[in-house]
Image 1 (tube, rainbow, N blue to C red):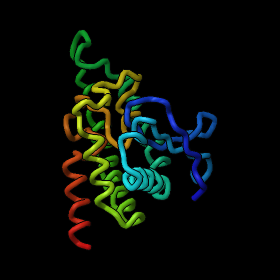
Image 2: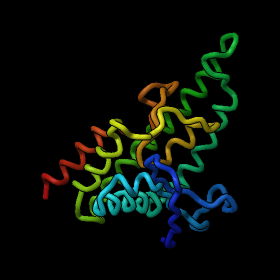
Image 3: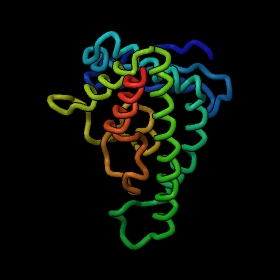
Image 4: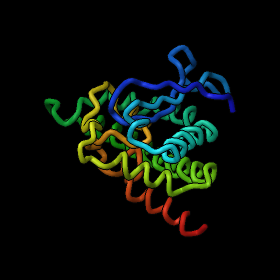
Length: 197
């Protein structure tokens, strides 16, 4: 696996995600220059062990080829978002709705599985599943947190999948279209790994 670049964003919002540089091809298949992006808010919010666990989670996505796989799957999600005018559109668009819902559910199932696999790999790599569990709980805590409740970027279904915790939003396909398992599910699985040690 190529050594990724690490970039720190100067924002208080806790973020950690993996991406390619804009000049890299959409699907690199072994090429490209991956970059792990973390925010100052994430670095401030977490302990050293928790930061290591989050970085291990992002590295696991790279090692598993998730970035390339997700890029390929973004195409139907992006196309669905372009074709479907949303629930506020004038008139009924059952075909557009069905296409968008199917794309969101399919991508959601794939993405949730990849998140759980990256959690397991991070726990194995660090030898400390509890650190990732506490990091997820701390980042999911909304008391005084600056984590946004809406993603104002275009195509938020496609872009929201890349953060260590999703940006909260209502999915047109409901929980089936969610890009991440619930934090409670992720923490429970990590706690089981702690208990198994």
